[in-house]
Image (tube, rainbow, N blue to C red; front, side, top):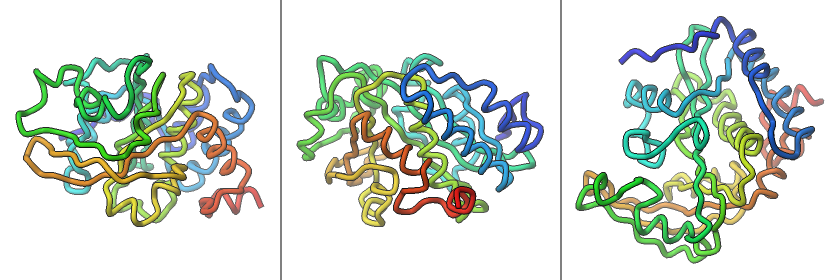
Length: 265
């Protein structure tokens, strides 16, 4: 399946210039976010990667074309079963010099003023606009992580983190999730950011690397195929998302990308 390369793609330098030129920072902290985006565009150019913010529909196309290294897209970011548009969703794509997409991440915004992360998971409304119409009869989610009950208000889900095998080891697995968080801060005035992480992935310490300091097991999710998997339930308030971006921008993170560390030295 061919994936359409953005019209403004020419090289990592021109793509990252377009990335910066098209940015809008509508929310605080404007200064920090501006500095971070400038830094990360420079880093991406140095490693031959072009960053692009695109409609969520592009994420589904890239996922379908890379099933050998990427599981099917989580339904929460699937525009075929959710009401997603440029106002409540985006994806961040990294392109190699030949225009091939090699890494991704996606975000969407929920309004959970009268509900909670816990309730939206168990009802499957987090995944489907209409679970009764879109979910299969075997799908279910059972949540034991009690902290999810306190996550309410305007909530951003961040997921679909993927790196092509040929670029693993060059820091994209850190750059893309963190830059997605920064982009969500710039776009939306939200209360919490949330995510789900497979238990075996969480045990490798990646939840903390992505800024989630208190991951909680568990959520058991049964998917369309009837396969049950155990997930860590991730959440952090907006202030913690800002601090996560600030620490990396200042070179203070516990695992600062080596390229960023060299640039800031």
